[in-house]
Length: 368
Image (tube, rainbow, N blue to C red; front, side):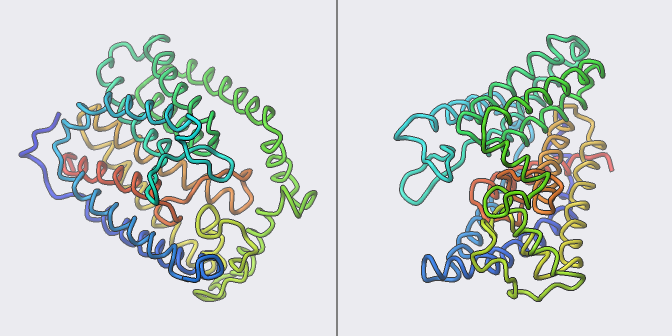
């Protein structure tokens, strides 16, 4: 573990990129939600004000976490995961968990609510990083290199799927597999894991008729344009007219109650429609810079635990961004995954900014 007295300033590039993404996110949340929130609440700024509040709280937490002693991340890794498991179980209790959009994924009192599955993503990262750093000499074995860590992540995945929330569960498991690979597990074990994972994913799809509809809609959305294929068709109707320069900020047509969830899961569609290829490309470039800096931190820090944490945080952001952009552009089947820093959401935005705070903290101890 690095000496706290030897730390330097956090990575300024990461800070600038995050602030740019958050600024773009608040602007796009307002633009994408103004028509809907005016129609429903009589206040076109309803979601934008809340997004600005979430962003402010998240940035404050990001800077607080960036200044903590990194020893705390290791000390709290196991207790944090235990708390996450307890909350995941609690959310399934009828009358306790809040049901939204067909999923019982929320806990809350009054207007304040949290989504435990979001925090579980970070809890699994910290726990697996601690586990692999403690058992570095046993990673090549099947039991300690594969079965035990996969059992922990799989248990969390099972609880998340009981809500159900396939999108968040997929991001968490994808991040866990990245950590298992980086930790040094044998390639043949990893190949077997991927085969089992694909079979399991296929089983989850076949077990739920609505997921089968999403797959068929992905293959041919025009087969059912008013039901299963509706979202992706409307998303493409938004992206296509954007062209190079876009229709102009605030000029989206699809946000006027045509495209469902324009300020959450499909905010990238509105971004492409209003700001065009240049705006969408700029957002992707900002994500690419953030990923580059995250990988740099993971490679250049000497402590194995901290290196795995940096890799896990970066991998989590990569997977979530790639899936979201892939969904809205028709490359992947529709899933309920938000775009980090841009989509509206309290738990998701706050958790992601806390994770970036950890990444900033670790950037203070790199060798370069």
